Image 1 (cartoon, rainbow, N blue to C red):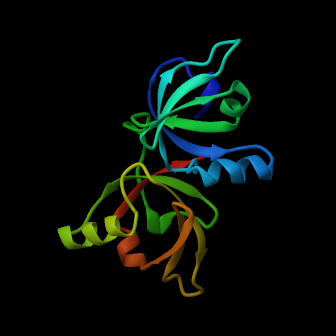
Image 2 (image 1 turned 90 degrees about the vertical axis):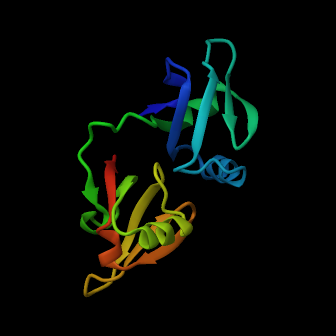
Length: 158
């Protein structure tokens, strides 16, 4: 994981975290820059000017200061990473969805809830008896049965 300003190659990346003061984080969230979203880097940051990205169908120019505060990860960086089921992820830990198992109807239902490949999720809470699991996905909270959570394979995020 690197800050957007530290990247040395163009390509597609996933936002992992937005750092900085609350006002800035909130402003970037209002335009959709939240963890789990895709960004395509068009031109890299130079010492005198910012960088150009493609985000949600639009080209945006970002200053070096803001680019330093957006932590990203390459889409294909996790090809060799160890995958763990969502049900085994500890409370407070995050992960990026890499694979879904189960029958077609279950996979479709999970995707309809926003659980798609390359989506960053965080385990918020687990019920006292271990079922269901509360997740933070794409800016909202989602409760999921433990049985369904075992079908989602993640790469743990830092």
